[in-house]
Length: 265
Image (cartoon, rainbow, N blue to C red):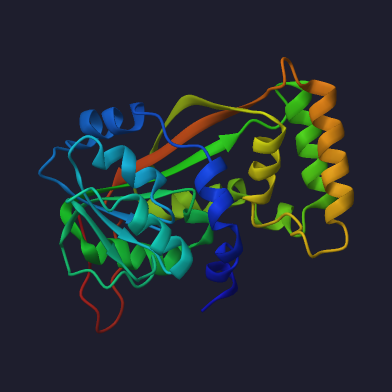
């Protein structure tokens, strides 16, 4: 199991409680732009604890959750156990275990930056139907639009173990290549969370790049976090603002290699 797969194993409880969900506008966008219907089969790659899948399941869609991390996959299975149209699979974006041409839409919520882009592209082309689509989705935390968010970002830069290396926005440079030769479209929707101090603490600990309680700089980070909260709280609350970004496009094309049939739209 790779390090990227393992790194959320100790974060599951906080991830479930304190990570944002996704706005319903994402579903409406894909219905209007990609012809999505409740008869469509959706594969959620890197489905994690099921936050994105649940938005679609609540509106009657069929979801196959593909997740390699056992604790996160089991948490997703528990969360979504009441949905008859949810199936859970132990797989990766690069090796989903799904059948050829079996999926109408691939979604990935807060996950593409952990994929091997080229291998995931090949796998996406294999499992999607010829008229299939892909939507890569992130809740992109605004970094400096408020004094609180600016101070929170400074805290992550100070204490994050590999924060700058694994930030999801670094993966945006690979998105065009993933969809190439067709440039994907981008839609953006507002999203937010409101936290008391305990919630803010849980939100910090849900991130794979922050120190854990057994690490030496954890107490100092918690003291600084409390100071940031006390400085900016209003009525005991602070607000996280996000842009929910959806990069979407048609099934990727794979260039033909010697001895390998071309995969074309």
